[in-house]
Amino acid sequence: MFVTVTTTLLEGFLSTLQLFLLTLIFSLPLGLLISFGSMSRHAVIRMPVRFIIWVVRGTPLMLQLLVIYYGPGIIFDAPFWNELENGRFYAALLSFVINYSCYFSEIYRGGIQSIDVGQYEAGQVLGLSKAQVFFKIILLQVVKRIVPPISNEIITLVKDTSLARVIAVYEIIWEGQSFIKSAGIIWPLFYTGAFYLIFSGLLTLLFGFIEKKLGYFE
Image (cartoon, rainbow, N blue to C red; front, side, top):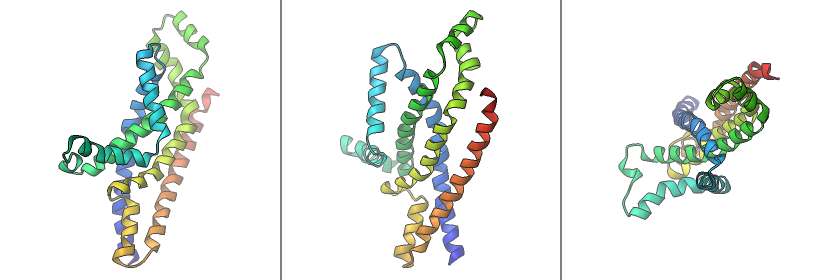
């Protein structure tokens, strides 16, 4: 039974891992773009972006999952996600990308605005363009400052992937809970915690290593 449970949970964890990795791949760069929009000098860009960030950060991720999954079908009176293969997974992915992009954007914005204005001016005096100043001087310093908060959000993402089960995405918690009905046992549900703990522990070690490597900015 232990081998069967472990194999089943590993299958669920692969779905969890896929959702986790794809969310990071899309939300990290998108968050940077959103941060530029939230810092724009043009109010017509800045205000809508900040409003979206406020709404996303101010509402539960579970609610966003339900709205994105059920919303199109209700609005257009036709199944949308169900027409796609793995549609539930894509709905969950879109929800997570939107949510975490907004959180990451605020971390990026805080990191960028924490850099002294004099460094921008010094770079321009040296003849560098604004883009060169940002990518060659500012960005690496920003990365050093945002690693701790970004790492916290990423570890939170590991646990938040369990929310995907509300729209029947077969992630690890779903698989663990299925044994309650099929076999009348509950310990596989608690066993899923070991997967989260191990994965979160590995990520903690990884981010600790990255912080040490970026220590030369201190």
